[in-house]
Length: 467
Image (cartoon, rainbow, N blue to C red; front, side, top):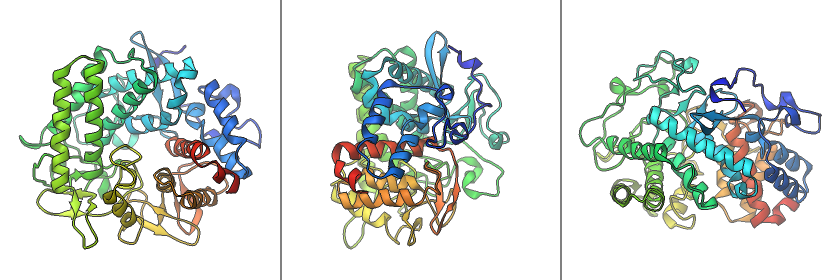
């Protein structure tokens, strides 16, 4: 088994270039990065339930794409180590890596090799957090001092092993979500060692620091770029906001900078994550004092969200997207998670909550400046790829947060109509011309599609026979 230091990513090529035969978009078996017997078994079982050949083909390509093409296993400091690239970028995002492997979590007890992958990823994420809790993306070699090409000249506190240093609350929350999910699924506590405990305490300290009750704190970020959302104003500390108990975020999960730094979806996600961490701290670390600190922190942020995180409208309140605590509020939604649409998917609220339902209706409408529609499809985009560019992720999240079979079916049809005949999910596509798309190889979106099809096979199997 290769060590992490020996892992070479430069030779990776898009998965479709490694296809063994025209009938599949998967790499040849010998070229796959990781194979799970449990994943392959479920893939075969679900595919047999799908009537539409194109849908079956896309599922076969996308569901195992993360394992086929992005996983690098090794040993680091005597522990299992798993480094998961995002796809066509040779770096690991904390958010993406957590989401890319999420769909396989309920299979982990059936496959010891798959369980080892999760253990290695938990160890790697803990190391990354300890390297720099403000970073969003990391390099395979922890001592590497050369970040991603576009981040070389960033004005920030540069750390070894960091690929990009954009402060996003959700990066840390997604790690907690994955670690909690692994623990609840397996009951295994072996990856939750002293290093993990140190990383979790650093997460809480960082979130506390970014409440900015004692000044703006140490984090700052600026980038010379023609794209305004790639940098942070006011010497890199962000636009002003009142310290009302919410946590400041300089960037959204799209890696675009916030307008108002009190980003509501991420604060809601933080409440959920802190409560999960409180439970893990009590049961696994036997640290009741830290567990109580996490719970009290969650209560404080939750109260601030109740007071500042909503917009009053004649038909009832909706969640704001960003606020500044001074009374200014922004309503929109971005396709990336966490966003307003994805709140129940991430466990931040119940999908039947009237507040969420009103918000959901509003974000999937002309009230959201990044909602786009045409005769081909409709969905949400964001400033990251510009106007009229729909992200398939938004369509997938809409289906994952719905129980309406007609709505889910429509979402699948939009996905089938907009892949540009590649049989993979892209980052975004033009609402009028799906052949104009971004990113051939975006593993998180592929995993999310696979997760949706598996969920449909279990909860609404008739849809797979009708699409």
